Amino acid sequence: MRAFAITGVSRGLGAALFTLLVEGGHRVLAIGRRFAPEQEEAARREPDRIRLHTADLADPPEVRTAFEALWDGAESAHLIQNAAVVEPIGAIGTLTRSELVRAVAVNQTAPMLITNDFLAARPEGRPATVLFISSGAATRPIQGWGLYCATKAGGEMFHLVAAEEHPDVRIVNVNPGRMDTGMQAVLRGADFPDAAHYIEAYERGEIPDPADVARRIHSEFLSPLP
Image (cartoon, one colour):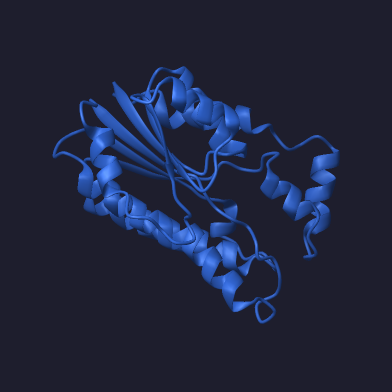
């Protein structure tokens, strides 16, 4: 059996990936602050295969024990770092301290700690993958998105270093592109210089459904795995 851990599954891309993995018959560990009712029902039906680990990533959890249980009896295990927040949106100098601290914790500190726990729990030689769901914002400055750009860039570099240190583990930064998620809805309602671009793309029907993006990521990065 292949095992998967995924953060941020309550909606959007995370929910779509969760559904694909559960329907594929895999063992799934979901980590997040909240879960959809259908996810809770799936975990009640199959508690040995589907586990929901409640944790607020703004106060990053210690999950090594959960990963050790995930690995137990699995031929391979694969971590998808999906959880992120785009807010606060605003010019640097106008952001509150609490907003800054929370965004850094969720987008950067939590993925670093979780990847570290995952690799620490991995039995030597067992096939493994880490996908860090990043963004084009990691490689270009966008006014109003200073926190999001910086934390995604930092997360990418951390995982690039991890890939150098663990050549026998597939560690990849994945830019999923735009998709019609709650994050996109936040951007369409926010006040920043490029906001009109996101509204116009949505009105032209150019924003893919998260389920389509999840299938692409699954096909490109997860289907060929042992």
